Structure formats: structure tokens, C-alpha cells
Length: 431
Image (cartoon, rainbow, N blue to C red; front, side):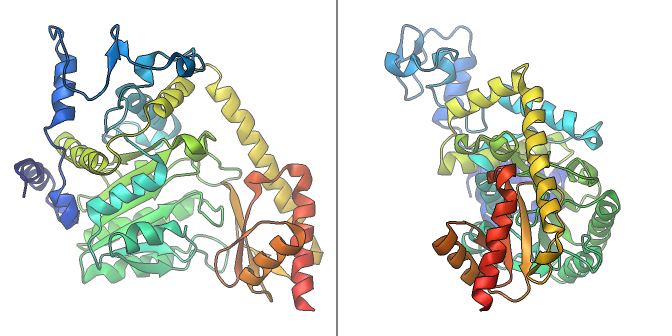
């Protein structure tokens, strides 16, 4: 094993034995090499450095070399904020700004110690880093029975993890705390589990209320106290889009420092929150309280970035940083939130009509981009294809019974017609 990796492992094992035990084989082997990038960073930081002949970029007149016809379309950005490689961990000013945003939007983080966000190529990349760090073949990945399909590629296909599913909703349409507890406690034999909590949930658009969150936190604490090492991944892709009386912040803050056997990891980003999907800017933040463990985990995350994509888009990170610093950021975010909230309310209004009750049930939803129908008499895949072929309506068949509707991409004035066509499709297939 590389000596740098060994040193990082020694730090983690000394400061947090349980976190060391959570690491996968790859997680223990990975490190951030003291190669070109670390030497370049050192050279850049030396005020007396006359020439910096380290990084493989070209410069001209003390600026990154660039085409004027490109720069002319980006007049507000300096060349040094566009063309050079971004650091593997992301622009430091952006990491600082995102951490400040976390504190601002999550009151439970006040007084908590945790790592600096590491920039990722959006959320899937962040989830992949977490999988590489913590998932070994055969490790149990605890997810609800309604979960984003890409988890299969990220945790099972790539890393060999096995899913342990619990029923998301109880008979009252709330988060099924007892089912969650049973699934988590089943891991006592192996002594390790990776828990994935995604709120607002994809595909259902559900975020729990405070009493449900209290139950989730209680279960995790009980499991840790029983000897299970828990990596809790908070997939907060749709953070902030809370339309009703659910919790309005990430569970991340309540899990930091809850128990030495529990490591919360927050995975979020600007893609969905700030409607910049194509810019691919996300973050992974480790909820370790010890500064040395924080740094070691970040070094390992940097190594994974370096060994896969090398670094993220500098231009994208610059755009997001300038957005966060803009005086218009909060105003425009509230405007888009109001638009999304209005669409969600319209969906509920339309679905309350009696004429739809024979065709489907509506899974609870109060947040996010999506909602989900449970079809009572129709195969979801057959309906999906029929709607597309006959009516030009695109939906997602989650499984045999569940149809996901992204109201985020439907104008409010079209929502009633959308569900009318879905209902017509159900009637067509029942003939």
C-alpha cells in the first residue's frame, strides 16, 4: 500500500477507529498523490516564485492562454477563473461559499464541526465517491423501496453492494420508522451498513415531518449503540424545495456527533437546487468532528477525483460562485421556489377529483420535483409506452405499479390536461 495512504489510514484509525472500520478496501488504498498538482499548488503559493513551470497549461502575458473569440462571450469572468485546471477539491472560494450556505440554511449545524465541501461533478459523482470510499462487495446498502434507480449502478454494479430495502410509507402515509428500524437492526451480524436517505425523495417527492425525523435519528443512534458502524449518506439533491409542513433542513446536522460509530456524509449541489443541471457542480461533505479525520477523508476524496475526472469544470464552478455571491441570488431563488410550489399545489388540486380514484392512488408528496402514482389496475410500463405513442406524454415507469410524474417540467396551466391524458391512457388500456 502507498505510504501516503498508510499515513492517512493511521490518522483516521487513531482519531476514529470506527470510521477506519467503515472504509472499503478501495477507501483504505486511495490517497491524494504528492505529484504534479500538489507541487504546482506549492509553487503557486510561493510569493517569491519567479517562474511556475509546473502545470501543463499555457500562459501568455501572465494570464492563461486563451482564444479571444471565447473570452469575448464571457466578459465578466477573468481568464484565470475559466481556463486553468480547477483544484481537484474545487475552487477554495466556492467551497467556502457553499459551507457558509450550509450553515445559513441548516440551523441545526450551528456549533457543529464538519469538513469543508469537496466539489464533485454533480451528485452522482459525489455518491460514487462515497461508494468507492465505503462500500465493499457484499456490504448492505439500506434504501427505501422507492429509490432513485441510479443507486443500482453506483452502489451495486460498480461496488458490489447489496440492497436491503424497507417500506417507505406506513399505513398512515408517513415515513415507516419501524420498517426502517427492523432493516437497520438486521445488520448487527455484519456490524456495518450504508444507509441512504434521500429527501425530498426521488421518485415520490416526500420529505418527513419532525416527528418522523426524530424517529429516524433515534433508530440510527440505537443501531450505532448496538455496535453497527453506519455510514449515512444524505442525498440532498432537491434540498430547499419543501412546500408544506415537512422539515425544512437536512438531517445532516442532527447526525453530526450523534455517535462515534456513525458517520454522516452530505451529498448535494447546485444542479437541482439552483436549476443549473448542465453545469455539473455538486459537493460531498464529511460530518466527521475531528479535524484530522476531516482532512484525511478529504484527501482520499481528492485522490478519487484525481484518479477519475482529474478535476471539475473551472468555468462551471466560477459561474456557481458568482451566482452565490450575487445580490439577486436569494430573490431569484424565492421566485423559482414559488413557481415550483404553485405547480405542486395544482397537482394536488387536480388529483383530488373523484374521477381519478378508481385508476390510481397518490403516494404522499410535499416537496421536490416529482410525485408518484400507484396504478391500481394498469401496468406502469404499458401505460408509459401507450401515453408516449398515442398522446406524446412522457412519464417514468418506476416498476410494475408506480408511475413518476415530473411536475417540475410541466407548466401549471397544462397540469390538468396532463393528468386527464394519463387517465385517458388508463381507460384505453382497460378496454
